[in-house]
Structure formats: C-alpha cells, structure tokens
Image (cartoon, rainbow over all chains, first blue to last red; front, side, top):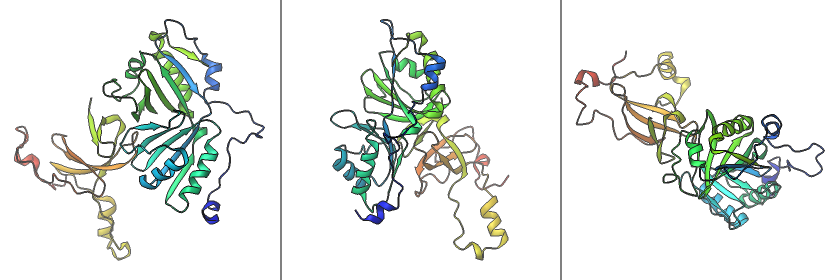
Length: 217
Length: 113
C-alpha cells in the first residue's frame, strides 16, 4: 500500500467513541411519536431494528473486489444479480446492487476498520468505498405473515417461491425506495433510507395491523 | 401489471422502477468545434419520431440504476427487446410476422411528425 493512495481519501471514523453527541437511530423520532406495539402470541409479524450497523457501498471491478473481500472478511462477492451472501457467523453480509456496486453490512463499530483494511488491500485498483452507515438502517421482519405484509407494500413479486433465501432487490416500497432481502425462511430484512425511515415504519405498523404486528426493541 | 426485462438485473421488473430517457444511439460529434450550427442543433435538439420500431434509452431508476436500451414499437407499444449499453439491437426492421392490426403504412420508419 503506497502512502499516496491512502492520503488521497479523507478516511475517518464516523463513530469515534469520544464523540460528545449521542448517537440516535433513524427511528428515534418514530419511537417517540408512533410508539411500538409489543409483540403478543397473536403476532404473525415481529419487527426489529438492527441499529448502528456499518453500511459500506463498494464500487469497482468484481474480480478485484472479490479477492479483497475474501482476504479481509472471508466472504465471496455475490456474482449473480439480486443475490446476497453472508460470512460464516452470519453477521456480515454483502449484497449485489448493480453490476459494479455492492452493499456490505458489518456489525456496528467495525465499518471503519473494514474500510481501512479494504483500502489497504485494494491499494491502487480502481474502486470506491463509501460509508453510508448514517444514511440508512436495517429493519428485520420475522414471522409467517411477512410475505403477505410485503405483498401489500412492494411492487416486486415477493412470493416465497419467487424470492428464495439469499435474494435481495432494490425496489419500490409504498412510494419510497427500500432494499428487500430474505435472510431466512421466515426472516426478511428491509434496508431503509434515514429520511424514509419514519414513513416506512408507520406504513409497516399500519399494514401489519391485521397481522398483529409487534415491535421488539 | 406491466413488466420490463432489465438486462443488468437479468429479470422482469415492474414498470414503476423504470424511467424512459429518450432516443438511444445518439452519437456526440467527435469534434464539436468543427460542427456547423445545423449539425450541432440536430445533435442537441432533434429526435426521430418514427411510427414503428424505435430504439430508446431507459434507466432502471429504482433497481440497479443502470441505463440500457429498449427497442419499442411506437404503434403497438410492444417492447421487442432490451439490451445493454454498448450493444447493438437485434431487432431493427419490422418482424416478419406483423400484427394484424398494424398496416404497412403504420410501420414506416423514420417518418418525422
């Protein structure tokens, strides 16, 4: 890694521990305003927010990024469109967004270290890494009624037979844009933009009412 | 329910995710300085408006956000093919079996409105 390549980017830890400002999730306002119905035995959908994860957008050639990612995190880049893969622990995921763009999600606090190691590994290759952790949040939906809830909300065909585990698409969700991912048989994930988070949350509460949606915090 | 095949996502996606961006295959003059006003004006402002097969640029705005080309029939609105940027269309003339509702007059190409 040449010094010049590192010095071309302004790399800093956006979640430094010494920050005096408290970190708030994009849904902080919604918790105050709309509340969170507690899950009950009747709940067929349970919503959770995975707060403060590290979201990194990787752009560049698939081959160099794949090699770097295998070395740094031991995950292979998903080569097929609209797919995602996880590392062995299941905590880190990488998703295909477009032919030269992937979304890497790592546990909170790891993004800076991962970005730095990827930059060192990629060195002078043609690539871009953008930390978008503050711009979006991950919601998980769990339960057997999740496909029904999503069918009312997204234009994409989320029938489980058409949407296997490990698939993820960027699509229209109630006039907003979200990434819909399926991470388990009854477990789905939504990557929601910060500015749409309150709108999407309230939409989910409303659409999920008939399934007695519960929110775990 | 109207679906368009995105050549980058490699599947049919809902029309709501796309935006049309006008005529495709418009080549910027190699040397703009040497263009006449008429040539430059044609490049900037004048677009074909054919009855029949038209090659268009579309963007998968809510999906992969890539631009790609669509060959569309402006009379029947049928999308005949979609292909990636940099590729050439395989459908350029009227298909051998034309639809019964479109007369030969309807499918003349290159007719400016």
